[in-house]
Image (cartoon, rainbow, N blue to C red; front, side, top):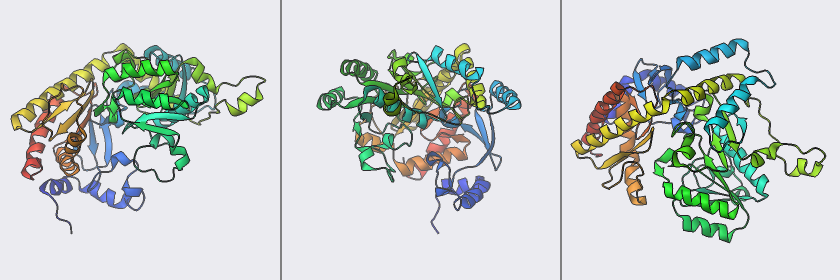
Length: 445
């Protein structure tokens, strides 16, 4: 039997119900989980309910949540206005197989908040939205290739998985239509456009890979906008995470750079499944039929169905979420709690003499441990060697487990909500002090 670290032993002791459920799930699901990001060794936790800033596991432990709904819940868990909106709609029906006023209201909120949104098309997830965005760009430009950047995540579709791991089942011919480039390097990007006249679009996470853990510099966004405009290449911002979070109008409003197309999900659906592509009317209109033009309708137009596109439940939740973002200080509150946590963790690292930093913008925050470096605590750009130190798997796993034991679900990534309180942040900093001490005692810091 593999010996357990003290942190792991305590994890087993505090979470026996989750351990038992994981053993049962291993025979039902690959790796015993239903989402790759939920996989955790030695086992993931199972939860029963959530409210505000916290969720509760099957063993009765209250755990502050810094990955709420994978980033979908800027309002926090079970916000009463969202709950009421969904309950009211549930009583009236979940699916009419037809159009509703709700989809118009939802689309109007997107157009009001997102600068690039001239027209909107709804989907059920961020993956679908990103798939549609690159297909629209290809159809609009009649060109086949798309550029993405190293480590940027755009869902699990065949094309946009290029450059990542887990490429099983994807034909090489599909991957050949994608070009993967290093970020923050405008010379390489422009040279690629010069060398290839068949590029339809470029897609990126505008804050950087993994929500901004590997940041994109604002100056690079400005350069991308200028170069893509000059070459006629469609610029797509993947705002699945950053939309309505980095600001009410997303990263594009925060940085003052308007892309040609924007993909959204997460906050868009108010905690229910929902995605959308928005952008220039001419591009979104690639879905429209042209009466009497059979060749165009067959070979250029994009056919798009989707059973749950703009379904009434997701629309009701999304309308209420976007209304609250637009009319209340949701973003400001989440940003303030993130700033409090960032200052607190950087102070803690200094007091404990642990190299590293807490970094990030607005309500997205990251912890870079084990790296002695200088940064502005907003755009922390590390060398590949420094990034490898910060991503030490064994150390970060033990820290994650130790934090769970102390009642905090975060690891080295934090997505703040308006439901997090000042007391929650103080509790979290105390939990980190205990957890980092335990990790140090195991010789990993």
